[in-house]
Image 1 (cartoon, rainbow, N blue to C red):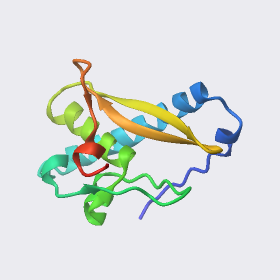
Image 2: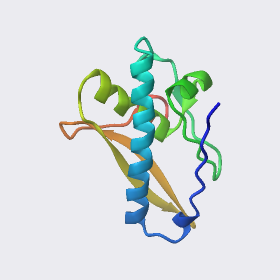
Image 3: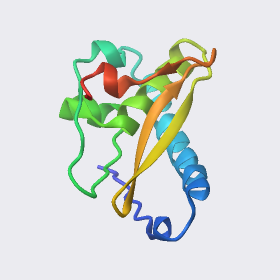
Image 4: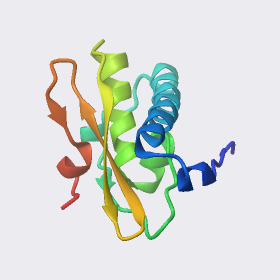
Length: 133
């Protein structure tokens, strides 16, 4: 199994604007992988029909998962679910949805959340729709 790992120590020193730019590029890479999966496996379920649920990852860990990994685990967190939804909107509905990145400071760390900005400007949050409180 091919499983690249990014360890982004630069996030300790770059500002939130720079972090957002880096995250946007990484999210686009995951979206591209998910689109290619949907192209290769046209019978793959849609996110909301897949049975997967939102599950927060513990502590400092943030493993990013593509569609088949998320299906296999039965759960994903915000970037996994958000990128899946964006990929299916782009590939199956020909809608150019994008990732919406928000963040908040919790103690000495920054916590990010990924949702979906639909082409009409509406915000869709797959994590909330699939169980995040």
